[in-house]
Image 1 (cartoon, one colour):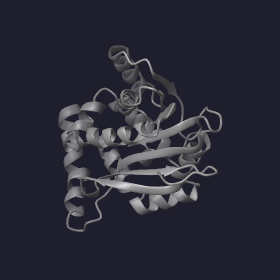
Image 2: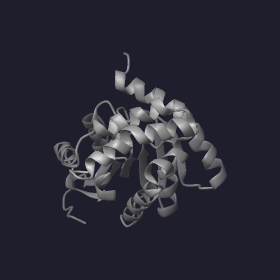
Image 3: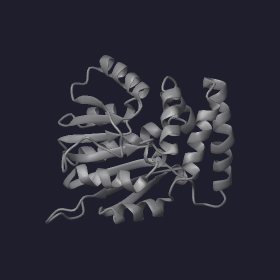
Image 4: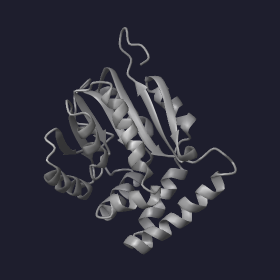
Length: 241
């Protein structure tokens, strides 16, 4: 069975940008993505997780941060792009972290038993999926009762005065910079398009609740240019934390 057209497109994009992915993330977000990821990793640390899944891990940026902030946890990075994982494994060989592993797999067909992870993180990955709901239901399945999902992703500011300028930057200026710096302007145009086509913050929160998550909420970053959603898989006696 052939993968959906969007899945094939995303696979080709990430295979092509793997070498410059980390540099361009810093350029695109002016380095702010590192602060947003750190905030999520530090909040997860307070949950005392033993096994964390970093879904759509790419080159391992968030995987390594989670491992450093959660030294008691085993952190598994999963991605479907072999070239992105090659970069992640090469970085892993240099950083000496012992609580990290990488696995090649699809976010829509996770090769893990039910209730396997204490926490699942997906950063800047859900918007690139062909079926958002299918991925969220897979995450719900592999989470233990009481476990948490953290979804950090790009978004469009809801402020009508800011939104046009953000669209101008993300749709035109950012791909132009990528073409100059990496020669991959077309690929970064796709990443811009995937953000524009993504769910609004409220729509994503609603979809998470539809998939069974409770205590769903989100924190906006950079005037709404990104947001970190979180939710919990319910269990008997579980309250808000």
